[in-house]
Amino acid sequence: MSTDQYSFADPVTRYDRIAPPEETQPEPGLDRDLSPLADHGEESYRGSGRLAGRRALITGGDSGIGAAAAIAFAREGADVAISYLPEEEPDAQRIVALIEQAGRKALALPGDLKDPGYCRSIVEQTVGEFGGLDILVNNGGKQVTQEAVTDISDEQFDHTLKTNVYAMFWITKAAVPHMPPGSTIINTTSIEAYQPSPTLIDYATTKAAINNFTKGLAQQLAPRGIRVNAVAPGPIWTPLQPSHGQPMEKLTSFGQSKPLGRAGQPAELAPAYVFLASAESSYVAGATLSVTGGEPTP
Ligand code: NAD
Ligand code: MG
Image (cartoon, rainbow, N blue to C red):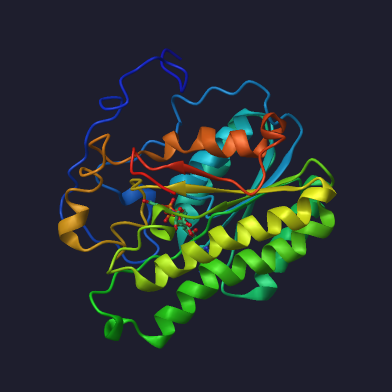
């Protein structure tokens, strides 16, 4: 392996500036059908035992940012369970194979995060299969752009809140009793928590809520030795975006207005999740790690 996440490189040109064609996928979208394809670190992520023996559950672990975290966690020595929607099976099977190629156990958990029973069951299945749980990544999310608040159906609002906020609550509530001191919870928020796009009212609301939940829960769980943190990505090239996540004019120049001049790749998020999951971040709790291509955050 010649290039890995430690290779010295100009961040502007490390990845191509993408200019996607006008493309639309039905929700939730597949990594398999992205044009151009995204990088999840398949060829580049090099592990060094930073999560040896850990047991992780990642929602939305089939594709995008969650898939990059899943590959990295496995290469760092963790067993990894991934949750995803049944229609994402092809993406999920690809990630399961990569986890297993890293010599770790993989657990595939298809289902719907809007269902509280499913949210509780994925925690129980992970604990049952791996003999415990000490890393939880609440990363699954729904993002559907709408021009006007009057275009957002009550059903969309409900589904966005359920997927992004309620599921995080249900899964966290089920997971915490199983988590020993040293465990970590990482929630995926967004630059949208601070700079809401006018066309993502419902989604941005959930991302502010996730950030707030993270900072409150972190204080509550710190005395028990469980650290809770968040990652705030900027524009990252994933199936979320062409499956009605962006207006077409924003999609075709995705990420180009950021200081680094390009969209980020899922692989560039993985080290942030590894850092927050591992013991090396032992004094970091209630933090939001921004990975925004230079866009300022508070
Ligand atoms: P993605 O589409 O690869 O991942 C989102 C995942 O959410 C899907 O793979 C799917 O498995 C899961 N999901 C959605 N609805 C679900 C449901 N009802 N039941 C079960 N699973 C469901 O896209 P991504 O961009 O990697 O998204 C991961 C996280 O990153 C999301 O929380 C998203 O809001 C956040 N985020 C993404 C960006 C970006 O630019 N891509 C920026 C900021 C934050
Ligand atoms: Mg997916």
